[in-house]
Image (cartoon, rainbow, N blue to C red; front, top):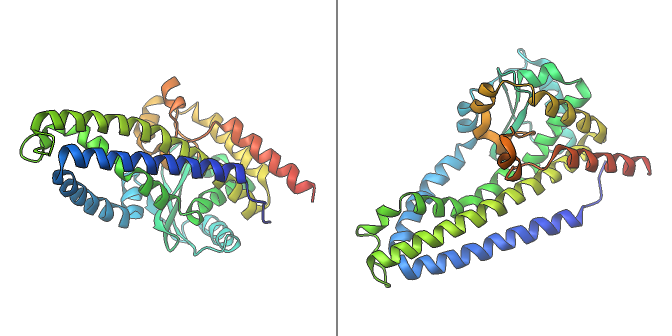
Length: 295
């Protein structure tokens, strides 16, 4: 079923991307004035590294999570579900991977629709009913269809450069920092500007990530025609996440941006989460369910 576009959500995503773009324009102008060509050399080197990382994102992400690509013989039902949902989403079937973990979760990765992977944990397979699992898989396929990996990579590129400039500011002080505004003083300004840019972009990128989670939820509802199943899955996963031992949670915490439900780490972790609150996502899905029933 095709859902009507959520123009409010699209507007929020557009405004966030516009603010990021404007912030990066200012950042580039200030750094060019105070640092000169050193930044461009660094950006070129870092850009090349990021391009390689992005090109092999599916392999690198799966490996970092300890995920194993599985065959149809090993997980026939999982393969059948992903193949069926991919056809409904008009997508090529992605690679299928499984992580042996008690944490019930799932994620998608890959640079484009033809080079994507959908991964689930064994804990997720043991937790959800079949229609709930379909909802989660459809959510991950919606991320692939929306090219979220590419969007978030582009959005965070200059933010990462700003972070690296703050972290390695001393590097720009020796030889690379002889800008038009004069050596050490220019470097101090560049580092301070980089810090401000990184903090603001950090918040904007997380807001964008939360909006894209809402969009993926809507996409999953469109693919399956069953928003309530995904809502039920989110509530189950969220409840199970609170029961996972803290040691296990720490092992997975760095992958929050990829997961369907983020691992919470206190008040600050929730405040700067890459995902919206489960309650808001469930509320949206229930609204979509009522919308479907009204047709």
